[in-house]
Length: 245
Image 1: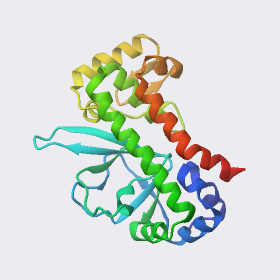
Image 2: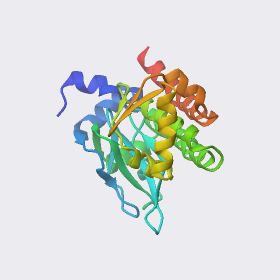
Image 3: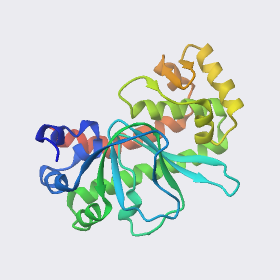
Image 4: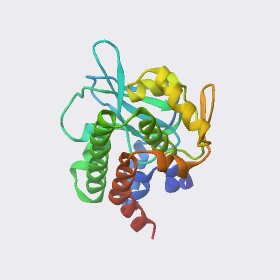
């Protein structure tokens, strides 16, 4: 069981911090703190979702894998939300997988507990529906971005989304992994990352990318990043600020 201070501060998860004191109290006994390593699969394509995860310091990807084994990221979730939101929508199994792309901590909760709380309506239901809308926006914009924008701009968008969900500027990630996330070739990611490093925006060493100049990354990114970030802040940020007042 969590210490009271740990549960009140929620270690940075925005959705948990947006809940009312009554809702936090009702979820607390069923929630467990877990450490998730990179590459850990939270659920597979076609599986029933038994647990949902509220990331605090880890970041997870929602991935689609084609028949030939190629993968592409549909969306990512970190301290802004949760992994397993589909469990409350009543659709059963889902055609994608969720995998940890940046290791760290999360709160783990049985999906049935969240479903029961969601069915009661009230603030929790409204918050989760708002998060669902924000996630749909991210998924939709990722599809647009992958279709219309060059890899270098897509890489900027992806790095910024990761950076927003981390407590530091270092992203532990290989270029091969990034290529899988973006649905591109590793050689192309190497070239794009090299351009960003030459411009002084990032520093890349094997297995790690450090954000050096965030403003420069935002200037080079396509409009997709700002649209997704603004929509998340509009839907979730206002609730968080109101709850902390």
